[in-house]
Amino acid sequence: MPSSPKLHHHGRSSPPSPRRSTMLIVSCCLLVGFSGFIIGFVAILGPSRGYRCSGVEPRLIRVSWDREGRDGGDGGFSVRDGEKVLRRHKVKAFVGIQTGFGSVGRRRSLRRTWMPSDREKLQRLEEDTGLVFRFVIGRTTDGAKMMELKKEVAQYDDFLLLDVEEEYSKLPYKTLAFFKAAYALFDAEFYVKVDDDIYLRPDRLSLLLTKERSHSQTYIGCMKKGPVFTDPKLKWYEPLAYLLGKEYFFHAYGPIYALSAEVVASLAALRSNSVRMFSNEDVTIGAWMLAMNVHHENNKELCQPECTPSSIAVWDIPKCSGLCSPEKKLLELHQKEICSISPTVASDN
Image (cartoon, one colour):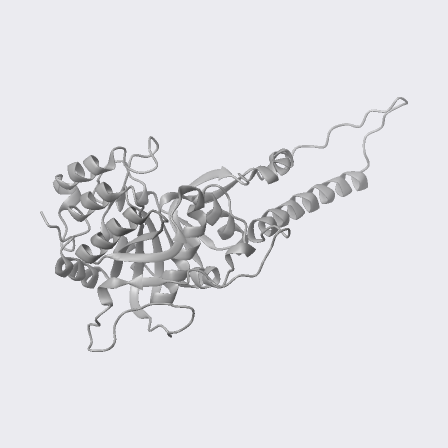
């Protein structure tokens, strides 16, 4: 810590006593510690004004591929206002590919590359890796778009549908709904959020998640430093945070990150209106992880700009938040042997 500045008086000056210096150091340490507490506390709590108690979201969840049941049972999963108790599938990890109504082309390219469109090939990939892959999407009031989505669901049967509004400005709400739904449907060791504009190596992701870890609350991602608060209501705190060296915290880039089961169990218990939502989804999750005091596992193989022998996820960092021109770039990457050749990757090509 830098030495305290000299105190200037109109009369004769004298050096501070050892006791006074000690008190100044103690006071600074207490101020920094209290500031850290405030950061975590504000991040995990929502605003007290306008708070209202609401039901746990999402109310409607559907995993359509299992609607007829593989084991002769009644199959399908759904949550309809508490009418049915879910039977959770045991898997290594659930991978939710976040997508939207304007991403039809991206999904088409993904199904031609690392995520097979053929049901049997996708099932084989899931059995080989222990991972379950589904596109995750909300709803819209646009009837035409919902009709097109219904046709795509019927054709490919690889969606998880959430009863939340699909809107870019509400991605933090969708992300929380996704983790709640995934936790309700699958008894997994990890839950992975993936954007629909990155090239993923499922076999290598599986190996990453299989590693033994001493921390039960783990947050895995390609970590970066970002502003503590992006909410305009909290801008007043930024100068103080800067002075105290608290203006940045570690959090994962948004295109891909994984949370362990214990972390997601805590998220699943949250009410949407009881936690602070920031404008950016990755900052929102990062703030919650800071408040929950989880273990951050930084893995740069999750944010590689090119395929390498060890890369897990490939995207155009830092130029784009995913792949630039993803529909085209996904296909180009898959043509490279170093990207696509794997004993567990099954492709339609």
